[in-house]
Amino acid sequence: MTRRSDIDIHLVALLSAVAIFLSSIEYMIPKPIPFMRLGIANLPLILALGMLTWREYFLLAVLKIVGQGIITGSLFSYIILFSSVGTIMSAVAMFATYIILKKQVSRIGISVMGGLFSSLGQLLISRILFFREATYVIAPLFLFSALISSVILGVFSELFIKRSTWYASQGEKRI
Amino acid sequence: MKHFEKIKKEHDPRKIILTKTEVNLPAALTRDGEPANNKKMLHLRITDIGIILLALAVSVASLFLFQSLDGAEEVHVTTDQGQWVYDLSVDTMVDFTGPVGITTMAIEDGKVHVHKSDCRNQLCVLAGEIEHGGEWVACLPNNVFIVIKGSPEAAGEGEVDDTSF
Image 1 (cartoon, helix red, strand yellow):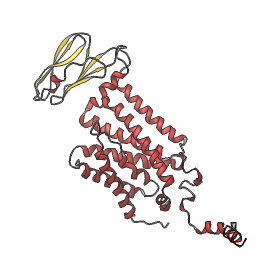
Image 2 (tube, chains in turn orange, green):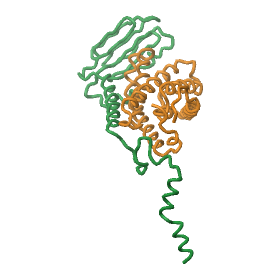
Image 3 (tube, chains in turn cyan, red):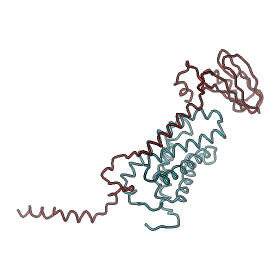
Image 4 (cartoon, helix red, strand yellow):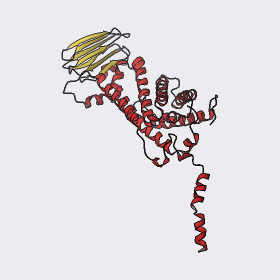
């Protein structure tokens, strides 16, 4: 693969389309608390590690936030603050985990790291802006559910990577 | 016999090797460079377990963040003016001033409720009484947040989860 300085717009477009599609699937699933999500829309972000440069990776994250905002209708509400902080925190955490640990970590570890930082970021926003002290009441529930769903998502991405011929044909492009 | 020879020719091992090299198998090696024969196996590396344990530790820590372990139940009140702590076993009635007006909290027989509030929706009054560690009642318009911290032996472990939901 040749090293290109410009953005691989096709791959970013494909992955963000998948993210937006999964957001709409997620939106249909009923949830007990509005901010609680399964996080299946983060699947492309987990898969994209090793395929995208950091610029492309964060472009994908921003596209996911905007797309998700449009799908769920929360683009111009305060909920966008939660989802953007959650996504950016998890994107940074996952990218850093991948860069630092590379082959010593599987997608399960990366997914759990992303889920942990996503929920920590959202709890931080909640603590500062909205629920203040009450944040501590929802924190355990929030963190435990994030742990469970991120493990499931990590197992899925690991299996996907092992079996997908499309993924294998992409090759180690950059990084 | 002729037929058998034909088959033999077709299954010439050299030929098989040739065809194998011709077919481009992108998945012969996974991206991590591991052999493809353990495709269905999940490789949980030691760092993965470490990360999962870290996340678990944070989750468990968040459970204890809220509960003080000394066992004494205290009523913590947070308002615009500051924070106050009251003993749950001592009956009192206190006024708190917020942006909307006055919120009156009453402690009676080990239970706390908002007796009166100048807010419009009166949700805090309707919320009723709280008595266990981890339970809370709040008047959001008036920025008064009342929570019971610490739990005696009487309140079981499951109590916290119940109130979380």
